[in-house]
Length: 479
Image 1 (cartoon, rainbow, N blue to C red):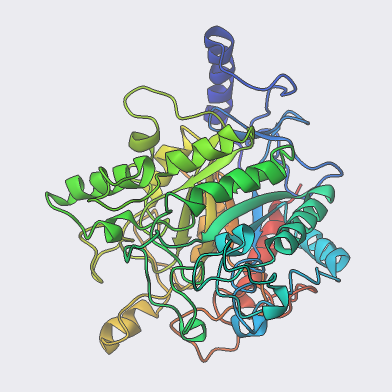
Image 2: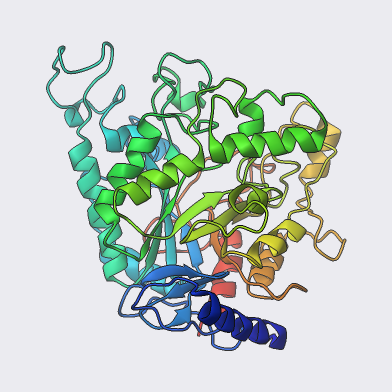
């Protein structure tokens, strides 16, 4: 791993600033080592990290070392609890029967040199409301206690399964990111209704069976009150407030210049509505953060970028306007896929490529940055134009040096995150996804190894071609 003298000087300057200004950190936290001079923890240690934010570093307060998240996403608690057939979504895991191969899974993750696992969660399953296709997991119907047309879901079993799985990982020394991945619609509102995938047709779109564009003011907030209560004492667990928000889509672009509309979409995302969201009753990310803190949890919280998580262009302006500091223990996240164009910017078109690298560097210089999802060859909506479809499916992406490079985009991204950039910053990175068969829309769907799929089996960790690239990189940078 590269050593950056400039970054070492920056760490010293930050330490002096903390001494002068009283920059807060927990009493147990020691001064963090710089990731460029003292290698950040990669392979899980005997003890799980006690994570906190210190300046632009994520720190394990138990060791006093900077902690760079490196790892994978693993789907199991999002779609599997609301679909009749888990295997249809490529998630060979029943959360109520628990993972009987947990010991194998843990060893596999260690063999991959993973230190962090991101786990998507489902609001309806955790809160107990949705039209379940698992009648054996429903509690007895009570017409007086339950809303019309809804069933009571055995959310206690779901919560216990989540708690046991997460605790098993942190007991083994891993850090865990919990994401509000699938959420519910606003009450009596068509705002967040989205078209379900084919296998979800027939399920109530108000329930957490389809990705929503923004959090709602009810269960999205209550979800974090519950999760913070479950894991507030486990500092190896971090909270990803909302997966891939799309405020510009929710506001139907709005009026004004592109930059004005973009800034308005960010205000909607962070501050919430309806005043900031074109009349839409959305909860802002700041409200979700408040729910975590009001529950007594001071765990590290993650706020994703706008536009499917692709954009960081107004992250600092939104969370730390002017010269103010961002809220304590808050870090940023971006999702970076090889063929993402402009995310949900109001001027989005198939001809536009959003260049994330400058914004990533600017944000990582101020707060810890996590690349919460990444992968080669992302789906783009140009199927009806064969010429554009073929062009996108060359799997090329504009790299920081202005060139396009085939197939190795994720390798460049991981190298950038490890400090291989002119800004001398680092970022965590979690590949999507550590599951046997993820039914993603990809350019070359006929290929045996789909580009988002890291493994060919859920527990043994046999890598696909993309998985081999990630596996080898994690092994190369492991301490």
